Image (cartoon, rainbow, N blue to C red):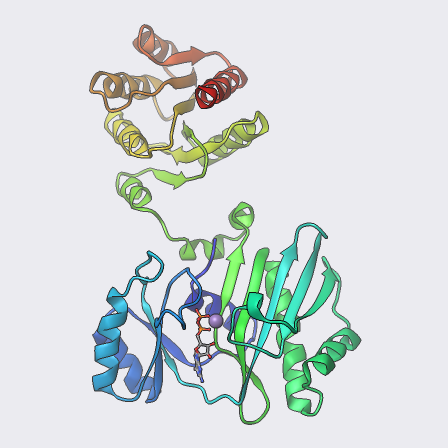
Length: 375
Ligand code: GDP
Ligand code: MN
């Protein structure tokens, strides 16, 4: 998951990395309020997950209310690389003497963190010739000597404030990437201000999706899709994934372990749907409707353990969904627990295929989507 600039900067702030004063605005009223607090000149920064906003005209300076409102209204409607902004960050314009580049990323091939820095900031790192690279072992510490060495190569050594500030930024960014299990934490540019100290003018942070469940504090940054929002309204939780098998069950733990088993068997989950404990025939019917709108889904795996949820209600919903042509893809179901005999009776003769164990159901669903792909 790539965080937006303002979200990355909130993390920077938590880790003590200095950022400009700024407020997030969704409309011109909020932007004007921010302007009163910050004073002019200001920079308006479109909050997008795509890079190269500067070049695309999505970062603009303004000197007074009139200019700010005009540019704000342009920015909120400005599509960059197919994306509309989430919001606009209204930020104080910092006076800088020089720009640097600094990033840390998880280096998969070397299984370590790699630091990349350059005295040419503000441009895309791919276009920079003089970069300095330093590998840092996982859980290893960055020695004062190593940082000093990098500062020297960057040409910062003449100013003690800058050297100390650079070392401070590097250590804090390393703490952030370690603790948040980030794949990348990039500051481009870091601005050097009048007194020689540093400030992060931009933030790009990518969190490892597979580690998200260990960081509930980051969940608020996850942008949910339209279907996920619809699911939330209907009282169940849906997460869209990359694969083609929809996984449905009652209880997050059950659905998650089913997901792991599917992936161990060579299948790929396309969605994760937990309808919780309060499901009725209607809500499950709604859930199937939502899943039918995810185009890439080829089969549905239902793993039900009847307890509070009566499994016959779920079966009824599946039957009706088939009858009304809400779904036309195969359902592979393992149903046990409360009312499971009734549930099986309801589904007998329908297109749903029933299995006694979850392993059998998974084996069958993975085989089915695999055969479909070959055809
Ligand atoms: P990006 O193009 O998507 O990477 O967006 P950035 O946030 O990096 O902004 C683009 C450029 O605008 C930066 O490289 C800076 O040169 C410049 N910029 C952004 N904020 C400020 C600021 O507060 N002061 C100054 N002087 N320049 C800024
Ligand atoms: Mn940038």
